[in-house]
Image (cartoon, rainbow, N blue to C red; front, top):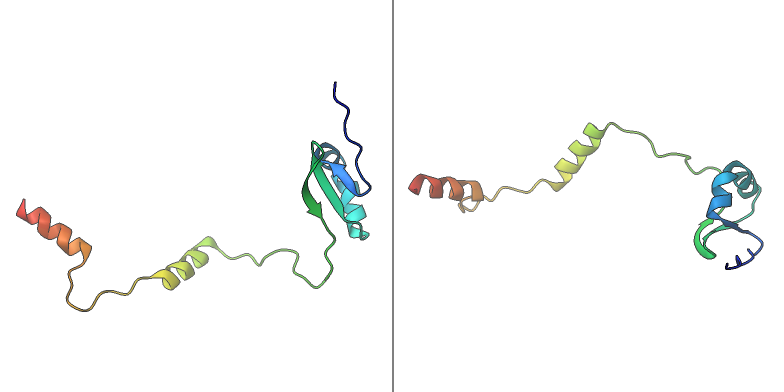
Length: 97
């Protein structure tokens, strides 16, 4: 049987963090920084938010608005130099068969 490595002050195991999340978040709100460990190895740092004016969540937008914005930004410009498009080449090839 292996002995668990003792945790340093400010460290908490994943299991303890999960079991007592609310209590640990109270400590973080009070200004304490926590290091979450998994089998003795640090995996995350939970730090207090320094600026209370930061938004708590991102503003929500409908997915359709985000998709439309993305499509508009990433739309390719049509070739206007007389070069046939890939669709035109494919259709021409199929007509020949």
